[in-house]
Amino acid sequence: MKTSILISLAVAAVVLAGCNEKTQEKAQETQEVAVQTVEKAKEVIANVAEKTKEQTQEVAQKVKEEAQEAAGTVAAKVDSALYGKCVACHGIDGKTKALGKSAVLAGQTQEELVTKLKGYKAGTINVAGMGMLMQGQVKDMSDVELEAVAAYIATFK
Image (cartoon, rainbow, N blue to C red; front, side):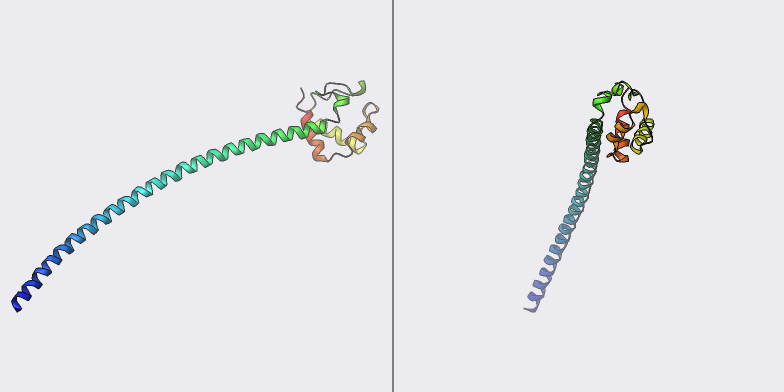
C-alpha cells in the first residue's frame, strides 16, 4: 500500500509538473501577447496624439486668422465711425476741401494728420480760419481716437 501511495504521489507530481510547464508556457505566451498589444496601443496613441496636435494647430491658426480679420473689420468700422463727423465737410473719400478752404485730406500721412488734429484740439492751429470749428469736432476725441481716425484717413489715396 505504501508503494501504491508513493507511485500515486509520483504520478501526481509528474502530472502537476507537466501542468505547471504548460501553465508557464501559456502564461509566457499571454505575457508576450500583452506586451505586443501594449506596444501597438502605444503606437496608436502616439499617432492619434500627433494627428490631434496637427488638427489643433490648424484650428488654432484658422481661429487666429478669423480673429485678426474680425478685429480688422471692427477697427475699420470704428475708424469709419470716427470719420463720420468729418464726412460732411471733407467728403466720404477725404477729397473735398472743407467749406472750400481747407486742404484735401486724401494723400496726407498719418503723422501729418495726427499732428494737425492734435493741434486743432489744443487750439494751436487755425488753418484758413477753421481752428474753432475743427476744435469743436475733435475736442471730445481721445489721443487714441485721433490716431485711429488719422490712420483711417491716411488710407485715402
